[in-house]
Image (cartoon, rainbow, N blue to C red; front, side):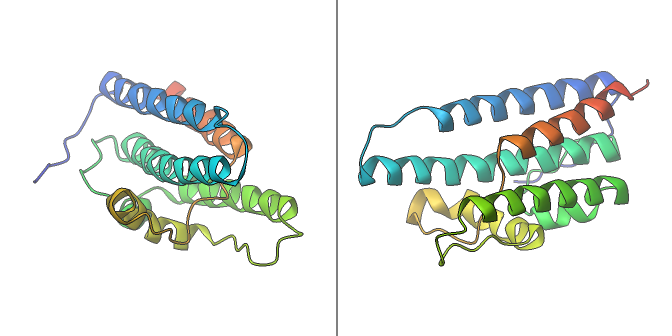
Length: 168
């Protein structure tokens, strides 16, 4: 399946961003719903969050791609490629916010020795595997588990400021 990226006008970009934001908000809401008690419920919840965060991260990178390049994001799950095309400012911001979230997660899980929180570059590279394969093999990869509510809030604020700065 081939999808050529097309240049977009400001209103088209706003519409694309709005749709992707809606999806992420819906995914985050679903991931926050209680799923019962006990280890099986916790595992179900963790699996859901793992997959939905992978999709959410992909949508974030694609929104930023559309805002920075003013063209539709290609139909791909290769976030490393898309990320590398973003402006330096956007890349630096996204990595900084992810690193802050990773530090918060490290503090939360400081008593569990076998939990590792990976760099943003590793997460981007493995995100493709999660989105494509996780629904078939349910094998976790070093993931986006560092993304937390504060990460999403800060990234959404950044996206909103970029949308607000769009001109025709």
